[in-house]
Image (tube, rainbow over all chains, first blue to last red; front, side):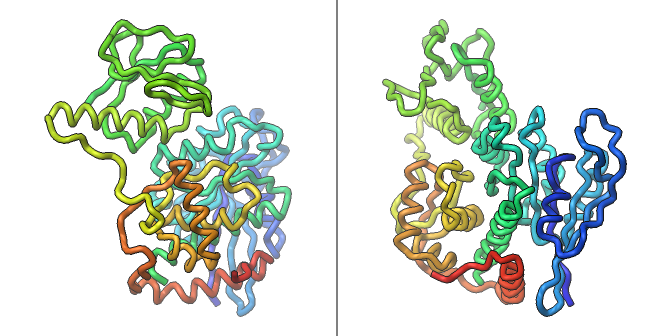
Amino acid sequence: MKEYKILFSGTAGAGKTTAIAAISETQVVSTDVVNTDEGLKKATTTVGLDYGSITLDGGDRIRLFGTPGQGRFDFMWPILAKDALGLVILIDNSRPDPLADLDVYLDGFAAELERMPCVVGVGRHETHPEPGIDAFGDRLYVRGLVLPVLPADVRQRSDVLMLIDVLLSQVEAGMAEDGS
Amino acid sequence: MQLVLGLTGLPGAEIALVKTILRLSTSLTANWAVAAGEACDVLLRGETGEQWPDPAAVVVMVVPRGQPGSGLVLHRPIRAEELIDLLNAESARRAASETSAPPVSIVSASHSLGGQARLRRWPPFALLQGRPNHMRLATLLSKQALSASRLSAVAVRPLAECEAFLRELDAHNLLVWQPGAAGAPASRSPAADHAQPRRGLLHTLREKLGIARGRA
């Protein structure tokens, strides 16, 4: 039996726990505590990590990990990203500066992004249309990155599956680059 | 090379955007500083901007997209790659004039569909919305340069569809073209031998999640 890993990262409240729950076969194990951060409009927040899993025919397992959103836990990000199939960065477009939020994760995973597939999902875009989706593409461009960016409401399983579909396409693209 | 960019007649948000692009870009071929009421090498001027005193400044009018303009124009909403291309062209022109060398061509070699291309940036969402196959084609082009025929083979999509998509991307200046043998299969690398089990994993995972792809 082999095990693989997909990582979900993003700011607190961006929907990491919800996204994992949308596709996990097992109940998501969360290390949530009561939120004491007044700037974060949630009852609970993840202080460790979220965990879900998918078991494939043949017994192989996909482990789904959600990183804690607060910056003080950023030391965990590269540890969790090690040997991951890919990374999903979730952005909450209702926050004051979503583009700066994206920069945080691009900086935090800079070494991993040199080789690891990654897709950026922008949430709450319908209610908070600015910055537009293309602004994220612009920001990635000036940072020398070409990564898929798409709107995603992780409360909709179809949107989470779309993020995973694009992520897997990136994995396949990397295999095509190898000449397979 | 240190060059100065002047801004006049632009709203605060555009000024902030330009400064952010200059600060974060890794693609600029010269060091650009934003001027504040001083002589500059390139002046971005909005409709209400005043001509700065420096007659040597190259003036670029910032106009709404779709509006023609005489001389150099930059369309709003300002796109990072267009601003960077404009500034790089100016720095190349200055470098060429300083060395008295023949003008450096910054246009890459082949724009025919017989060449290979990769994305220089992720496409605007309007080009992909509602077209999941184009999302996949764009993802492949984000990782490596491919000809239309190679893209068709890897993505398992009709050649005509891939050619049309490449033309659309090229029309929006989203591609970097490379000369190369169009359609020549990439030589098989040792990594390819390890890719087969992973390809099986991806297929199995897609089937499990209900996002398996049909073959064209």
